[in-house]
Length: 324
Length: 159
Ligand SMILES: Cc1cc2nc3c(=O)[nH]c(=O)nc-3n(C[C@H](O)[C@H](O)[C@H](O)COP(=O)(O)OP(=O)(O)OC[C@H]3O[C@@H](n4cnc5c(N)ncnc54)[C@H](O)[C@@H]3O)c2cc1C
Ligand code: FES
Ligand code: FES
Image (cartoon, rainbow over all chains, first blue to last red; front, side, top):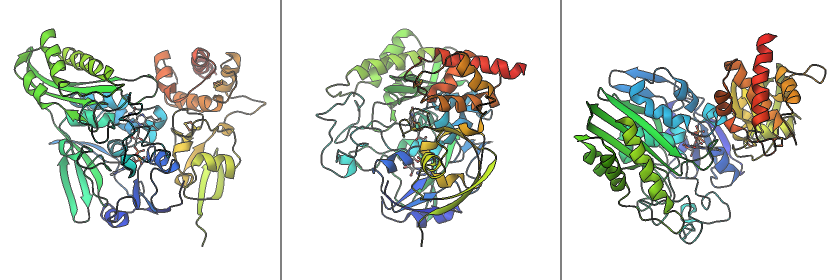
């Protein structure tokens, strides 16, 4: 690991100037479960590590009139076991309990989970100077791309690793961001960016910005959500494919739905066409399989990952039928 | 000026002071600076749980935490559990159930089990398996470990 100076931040306002304007010079430390790995492999080589845990009051879950507010340093374990997170947000708890292991959920934070870097094995290896590491090749294109993107990829084909982000997007969540000129708020729909827009980052945070809150609006009555994740190893593993679906039902008709795919694209992949298609439909097996097919219509698999299409279709239709 | 940081913490009930570099993980500090070699290094990246310790009552992977982060905190390691003369009930049940072969994973499993039973003294088998998902064993096939944990829960309840 490269040597770095370590700074305990003491307030939200001072973090932007501690981070500075150039990417790579400084890095925010939350639980460290992702950052420590990146530092060990020399993927992240900052001069300064800015610890957020020394800032009081960033670890909370509050139910307010307009929805749920989650502090950035709230651990995944606290979200998993919180009794404040009631039924309407259960898709988030389902997703969080499918993340990593108890050890990692005890330390890993919700903002860290959303902002974690991708797990592409070329990106994570010191030996490959890939596009994301500032090189000029995406090695997955001619290499082993079993776990890479089938939608939205190019010129880099990572998949976004976060389970919680998929669930949060299905709940229409947004994030509060602190920058040098104060706070701003952004829907998660707009927070993540595709590699074609910015190959070096997975979200639109500037170098001197960080996430200070996650805001989940209250959902309509009779809304339920489900998270389905497929992994190779059930104990600990990132998603080969996952889906978060929420549906508002009136009787057996779906009046509103959200559908977000995980593990298949460089960002949590929302499918508005499917959401519209489900509106006003009675949920039958035929409707669910039509929705599943539509969800993967844009898929353009690589040499080793076409299996993900059918896998994802299956969990999409399973999720829709389970909620009806 | 030294680039080392000065850290004070409580480890297994003892006050401990040490110097470490900011980039040293808690696992490195435990093993290489302080000589607590009961905590093992397996993968060094969060996958195997051999490095499990209990920090402020929470089970964590010491390979993914920095040493300086335990400043002012309470840490429990495998060294704090039982002694050769008087094994901790979890250790005793691992022995009786032959829940180990090579043993490299055992300190991690025992510490994880303690963290589980501290919170949930009467876990179901499903809860034991869910909780131990962060601990990898290449030898035993897990069944004996799960039985040892369930027996340890019983033994602690009856003691
Ligand atoms: C073995 C293993 C298995 C895993 N499996 C899964 C899985 O199945 N599903 C899944 O979703 N994740 C998985 N993870 C990832 C894990 O959940 C994340 O590492 C964790 O949630 C990150 O949170 P943290 O607080 O530890 O973040 P850190 O490691 O502290 O930070 C992660 C990144 O986010 C940045 N960051 C942190 N906080 C903020 C903030 N407030 N604002 C802006 N940037 C910030 C950091 O600079 C860093 O780049 C796994 C990790 C490991 C090691
Ligand atoms: S050495 Fe820490 S989890 Fe494997
Ligand atoms: S006993 Fe050998 S790894 Fe578990």
